[in-house]
Length: 246
Image (cartoon, rainbow, N blue to C red; front, side):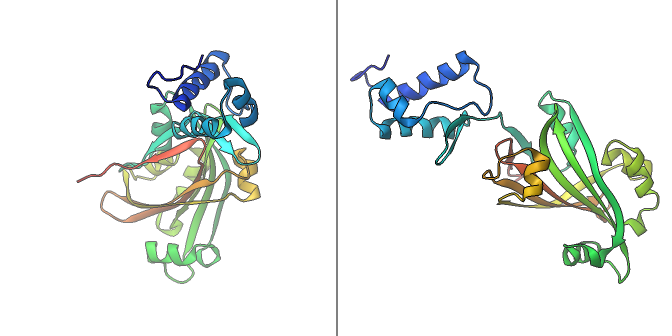
């Protein structure tokens, strides 16, 4: 029951009550809550008070609000630490989930045919006619689709990499097979954008939900540029965590 004049804001009481109802009822991710009008009638308050309670639940990631559609129980967010050694499998296992990756495409082409040709040429200092290898992967955690990535390597400088990527489960394993035991993140550029129709299909996400996007440059232990990676993550499933190093 809502208690008035007890020193606790009504919207806070409603937010706590809704949180309990969601948890006790076991409403799954994507489950729809009653409308603002229905909740206002249920609690005997105005819609502004209900909206403030829903904003609080949205802030704490319990629900998400789609304007014109309603409020829905959110999927649990996976924190992705932007760390020195980017390893997809290790990240997923830290959440006590099982990682998996599906190869969507593997091709070798002249770097001039790459949409990001200028970036690749600058990162790897590519010469005219030098080729790159492009791997596209769909990453999952307990079958939950969380990442769509494109990995670009200067293949002419990495003999055996194409065959290793075909036969290995992870990129780390493939690189180790050709003699690269370690690699680290040089830098990441993070942004946000709306998904394409293909990305919506592959990630099983909503067209209205933005994607987190990262452009990563990875290098070998001696600082030689090794990999350029473009990855997108559903913002309703993944949150980036950046901690200062100094």
